[in-house]
Image 1 (tube, rainbow, N blue to C red):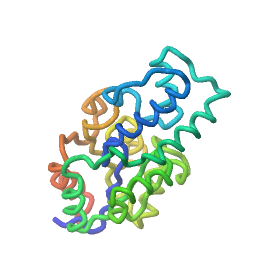
Image 2 (cartoon, one colour; image 1 turned 90 degrees about the horizontal axis):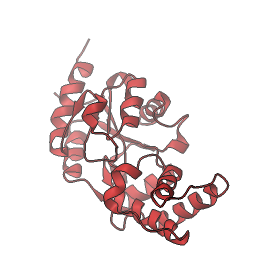
Image 3 (cartoon, rainbow, N blue to C red; image 1 turned 45 degrees about the horizontal axis):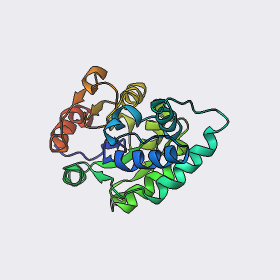
Length: 230
């Protein structure tokens, strides 16, 4: 069955793109300026996923320090400056992402990005990697009425992509994605390759898949009942 009329929303970091090397690299630059040791990229699953301020807070905690409320805005701004300059030095699409998205588009689906990453940085990352053209809308937390897990983020993204929530699907890698989808009454598929402190199977989405090679069939399974006439 074709996917005409379907809107597929994707999280960005840890779902479409493996951004951990550049996020952790930027964090380590900030930590170094503060006299703290670096954290390894292998720590990304526990550190990344809550936005820039939380990432820095977690980095300070790992160094045995506390990020003060007074200093946080300055360091968040510094982090964003550093990250903007190296946004795609090492970040890459996850294996099979481009082929899977090509297939979904060929089947008639509309694709969109629903991310808590700032919209400017989201667009910059996708443009730098040559992937922005795939998406009818890219909606970061700053462009949504409220960020995920609030339902309005997904619903606004679907609206901006000229889609229908009754024929939509959320693809992510975390509790935030699962909760946002549930709040919006949209089915959810989670990948285990992203940034979360628990295995995504514990979050009980509609489906967990291991790779992008499985995505087109998984989308068909969940959306066919929603796209069927009547």
